[in-house]
Every structure is written in structure tokens, then in C-alpha cells.
Length: 113
Image 1 (cartoon, rainbow, N blue to C red):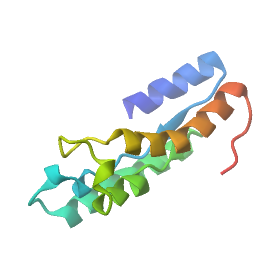
Image 2: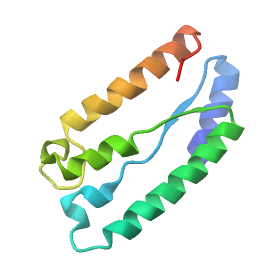
Image 3: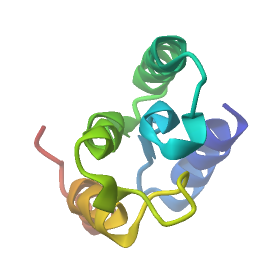
Image 4: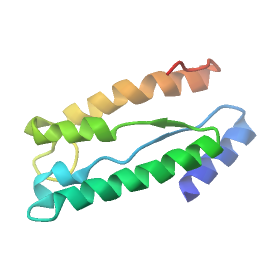
């Protein structure tokens, strides 16, 4: 949460805004291998729910990229050749969610959910 607090402090100083993202689900990657995928997903959901509660307290926009990361289970092109990290295609999807919010924050507009 240090990054969130740093972002909020910077936002106050710069009079702009802050956005944050949920974490992706690495349990859908080859790297997860024989690990307990249900446990990974449950723990990521728990972490993201705590992150949502904290960002709401700080009046910060939280962008969901977790749902998109889970699409990689059906579309391996969303994972890079190393079997763990997002591919360019996945980052492109995330940017499509993040950019409008960042643009609105930086332009002073209110982002519509």
C-alpha cells in the first residue's frame, strides 16, 4: 500500500489524481504449473478486494485487469513466451482500460465508470 499512499500524496501535491490497478492472475500461466490454481485465484481475489477497499478510502480509481488476465487460460497469445509475463497483446488490452482513466485524470475531467 506504500505505492498507493505515495500516489495519493503526489496527487495532492500536484492536484491531479491517482489510479491503481488490480493485480493479474498468474495462476492462468504456464508458470503456475502444478500449483493449486484455485488457491492462487482465491488469494488474488482476496488481495484485490482489500486493494479495492483501500483505494475507495483514498478516493482512488481502481482498474480491473484481473478479469482480462484470466482470459489467458483460453488465449495463450496473452502470455509471453516465458510462460509467466503478459504479452504485448495483454498489455494492449490493459492500456485500453487504463488510458481513458489516466487521460481524464490528467486532463482534469471526471472519468465515467
